[in-house]
Length: 417
Image (tube, rainbow, N blue to C red):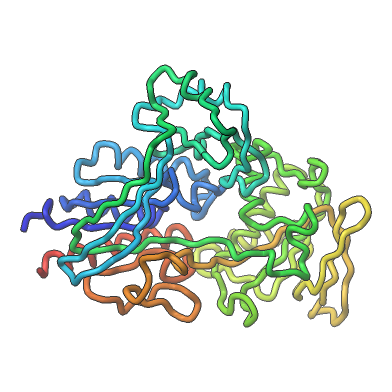
C-alpha cells in the first residue's frame, strides 16, 4: 500500500493532536484530524500566555494553521467525534459523527448575522463569564474561521441570520452526519479538562463569585477574554487589591485527584505575574503544599518569589467564607509557623488539576485501556497510540514532543505492515 492509502486518524485537535497530525502528514502519510468542538486549538487557545516563552497562544497556533492550510495530505473535520473503534490494525474501522453547525463553508466571518441575532448564550470559551449571540465565532482565532449557531438558544421560527447572510452560508436544517472510515493507525490526543471545582465545597467555587479557577484567570488576563485582558473580580468588575492563589485544589487528594498535575505551580506563578503587571501594589498570597518547577523553570519561579508583596504560606486552605462586600476570608494552616491564619482578600484563584477528557467518551468501551486515574495506558492494542495530556499531565512543550513521538510510532506501525 502507498503512504496515501495507509491512513492515520488523530482524535483531538488541540496542540498535541495538531502536532501529531502535521508531523505524520508532512512525511507523506494521509491523515484525518478530528476535533469535537467547532474549532481547533484546544486548551492552549484559552491561555493568555504559555511556557516556555510566555507568549500568547496565537503565535504557536497560527504557525500550525499555516502548516495545515496548504497540506494536501491532511483532512480536518471539526464538530466531529469518534463513536466506535473496531477491527484490528492495519484494518481499523472508526465510526465518526459530525454535528451540525448550521453554517457551511461559504461563510466569510463577516459578522452581519451577529448584528441581527436577537438571542444570547453563555460563552463556554470564556467559561461562561460573558455571553455571545446565538450565532457566534468559536474564538478569535477560530480554525476554520467560520460562525456556528447554538440552536438551543435560537427563538422558535427565527431566521434573521439567514436573511442577513449574503453568501447563503446558513442552513438551519443542516443534519448530523455519520460515516465509517478505514484507517491503519489511531492517535488519541484527547487532552484534558480542569477538575470540577464545584466538588471542592469547602472552597466556595460557584457559591462565591470571587472564587474562580485557573482557567478563568487565563481568560480574564487574555485580550480576547471577557474583560479584554483586565483582571477584575467577577462580583463588581473592580481590579482586585489582594489575591490568594490556592495550590493543589483537588490534586494530591485521595478524595479527588490523587496525582500531581505537574503544571499547576508554574501556572499559578505565571498568573501571579499577570496580577503584578496590572497592579504593582496588590497583595498576593500563595498557599502551597510544595512548589514544583523542575529544570529550566527554576529561574522563573525564583524571580516570581522575589516579589516583596508576594507572601508564601505553606499549608492547605481549609475553608473559604465570604464577607458582606464580597471579599473572601482564607482559613488555612501555616505549617512553617505552626499556627492557623485568617486572611481576607478580594479574590481567590483555585489551581485546579488536569483531568483527562477521554473518560466517558463512547468509543472507549473495551477498546481503550485507561489507568485508575482515567489516563490512557501505554499498552494498547496494535495500531492505537496516545499523545500529550491524554496519557499523563504535561506542559505544552512536553506535549508537542510527545505528539511527535506518537506520530513516529504510528508511521512505524504502518511501515511494518
